[in-house]
Length: 388
Image: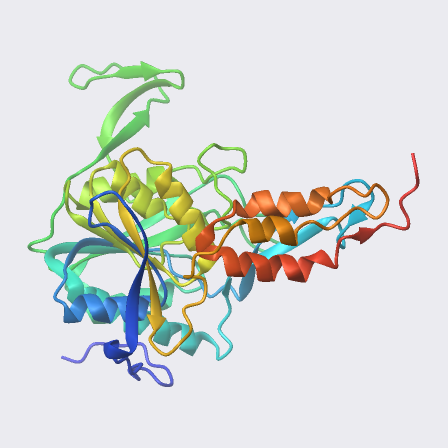
């Protein structure tokens, strides 16, 4: 019986990859473990894992949502008579733009999902996090690759924060997470429980009732609607990454679908929430992202976890210059940033802010220097500023 499938131009056209043309260059190593964080194309990594017969137990991915947006890190500058446009500079973090339209997005994800299906153990499972823009399409891709019979849940992650009122329609306050098994008959599952607060004072005789600062509650098995708050800007967990997900969300998924020492993988790892939670829960992990800023954020986050252990590697083509891998003296940044205030003769506070912002991370030294060079000319006296 023929099953309906999603069809688009160039569907099934595979990217030619010769792994002999790539190197996995070690950059840093912390501790004795096998956890690995990769900077580079996840398609190369997926093919490498498949050809080397490496298996994983759980995959969570939060891929681009086809938002047609660029994401920036914003930094305020403009003290003591200096400004840059509106007192803010933007550092490009990553972009979610598909010049050739939705078809190119689907081709990207389709090819990678096929590899993910092959590297999952028979007892493994995958969670794919999307939103309203692409959820209908992604569901069809997953049905085709993993099989309708291996669909388990369409999870709704509901959050009250964020978003703006719509001109027409209801405010969008949820994401969708598709949960599929490699083989539903063999998949590992550990049911999780959550608090259910009691709104009415009924008499209960056969269930245990507990109480905290929010009221009385009982424990119930988790439902397919996750009422987990999105991160606010002032929370300690919050990092400088626009699409960061809360650790509580990943904790629920990892506890339900993996055991200690299982291998958890995130091939669009972003700020590193999946990897951080896996580390804390004593799972092994593999992470990958093609952006230097996500890897920088992720690396810093992992180093802040007690007993964290991992290797950082860069995926490069052999014939390309391995930019950023040559260790250099950080004093070059200090020397370079000796620009003086035209009025006081002292170092510009904005430039010093930029230096501390990058934290002199050797791995990204070249990128920092280039970025600073492009911003130096923007730090000019504000002629409109009145003297005190």
